[in-house]
Structures are given as structure tokens and as C-alpha cells.
Amino acid sequence: MYITVYFGNKPVFLCEKKEPAIDAYFHNSDTLLLEDCSSPALHSLLQKIEKEEVHAGVIIYADLGKLLENFSRAFTIITAGGGVVQNNNQEVLLIFRRGKWDLPKGKLDEGESIEECAVREVCEETGLNLVEITEKLPDTFHTYSESGKKILKKSVWYKMAAKDNQILKPQLEEDITDIKWVPLQELKQYLDKTYPSVKDVLQHFLHRTL
Image 1 (cartoon, rainbow, N blue to C red):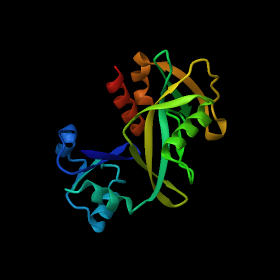
Image 2: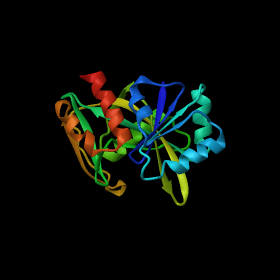
Image 3: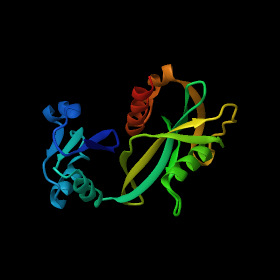
Image 4: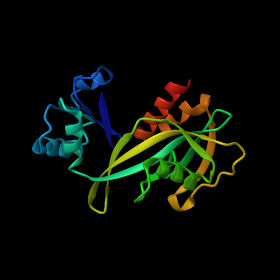
């Protein structure tokens, strides 16, 4: 088992042991390898991952929970919820935001459950008002900077079903300028036009669906 944290397009893999799925990264000279979860070691990796010549990182530690806990201490944590929404025609809803195709999601509000957050954000960003969670999808992690702070965002994803004949309305104040239903067989065309973490979610969704 491993967790992927994206720094822009660069993945950092948190692992309990060497994973066959990411074996290729172990043999690349541009990958940072670390078998330690101490604060100094993690701090060093987080500095080096910013270098242009570094394209990925792998951290191996026997206790994945402790590794994630120690790794997270370097960041301000934000939790968000979102969904891969599918209609009765087997189409998936994509939004276009800041030059990328994306999935609807948003930050967890105080007092609400993550499921409530995911449904609320999907409805607010797309104009849908009838959506239902049908399945849990893998969480994703990515980092960014905001007001001088290093942010680690955990996005919790769900597969959702939407009733047909609902009017779509992109939430312009969230920089969403387009929204569309995409047939399953065409979804792969959008994978290279989105964010790495969203690509992971859609690939998992396609693998389970097709």
C-alpha cells in the first residue's frame, strides 16, 4: 500500500515497502529515495523536491500511518470532498477550471460530514440538485502554497449518480467556465488535460467501470 502526494506534477510516494506499481521510480536518477521519517530527513526531501532536476520522491517506512502523520506536520492541512458524477447515459461530468478539465470538489465546512461536503460542493459547482453517493473512491493528496503557507490538501472522492434532465450551471465565482457530460469511451481523451491527482481518480473510476 502506498500514498501519492503531488507537488505540482511531481509525485512523492509514501510506502511501507517497495511497491511493484512504482518500481520504475526506484531506478531513476532523478528520484529522491528516503528510508526515514524523521523531521530532518523529511525536511531535506521537501526542500530537494522543489529542484528542477528532481522529478519524483519515494519515502519508505514500515508504519505508513506514522509516516503520513510526520510528513503532514510540515503543512497546513485542508480537507475537501468531491465526486465523479455519472448519469443514466453512462456519461461523466467534467468542469473546466483555470485551463484544466477538473472534477467538482471543495473544502469541508465546520460541522458537516465529508459526505455532505462532497454532495454540497458538487451541487454548488455544477448546478445539479439531485445527486447520490454510490461508492467511495480513493483519496488524493496534493500540495500548494497560499499566503506564504505550505498547504497539503486531502481530497476525499465519491462516485455519484445524478438524475437526468437537470440543468447544468457552472459556478463562475469558482472560476468554472465550462461544464459538460463526457461519454465513458471519450473520457481517456481528457486525462492529459487535467491535474495528476484528478487523473488518478478518473483512471481508477474507469478501471472499475469499464
